Image (cartoon, rainbow, N blue to C red; front, side, top):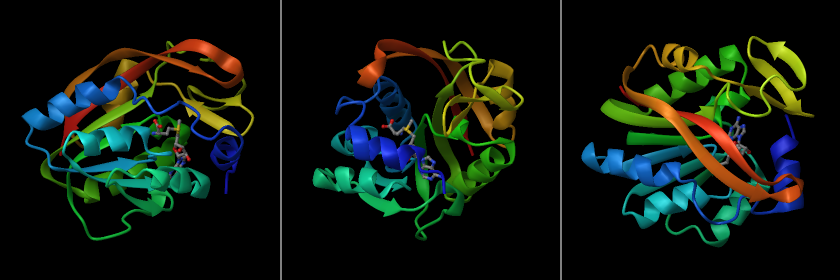
Length: 208
Ligand SMILES: C[S@@+](CC[C@H](N)C(=O)[O-])C[C@H]1O[C@@H](n2cnc3c(N)ncnc32)[C@H](O)[C@@H]1O
């Protein structure tokens, strides 16, 4: 198993602080308009984004395969239920969801696993359910850095591969869904040795 994230959570704890990504507010607005109640958060880390959905009144389940991240999340779970395991092995229970929010996880996989991950998400999403996914874009400053392992996919940090999405590529990834909206969102972060930096993220909002 790849230990990149487990080691990072062990060494850096709550890497991105407790403030949720600014994409959460936007997704909450969309989910409220769509009548979402039950939300799945695959790759939930230590729960900063999952907790924000719970505070907004959603019933939330997180899936995460770093044991340290789940332990951190459970220190203040805010009612979020967590399963320890890989998103490639979902489902972990027989729940169905009206909404899936996934931040900076899909781009960590190679092509076949990205498709397998989305297929597993679909199996747990009710018909008419919605998904809001955020991924690294091809406008990220790290695009093209590190060893190329697949098309537009680079080992930008040792042990962490990233697929950098163009707009067309992201829409094509969700071809089995009805794509409702896509766009770019800047997401500022300030952590570790990197200091303040601004991610150029792509999001996609799609319906099952
Ligand atoms: C960039 S972090 C984002 C964490 C969280 N979404 C957030 O914004 O705080 C990527 C997360 O995906 C998790 N992850 C990576 N591969 C996974 C897998 N196969 N199954 C479950 N979680 C995974 C990592 O452990 C890490 O928590």
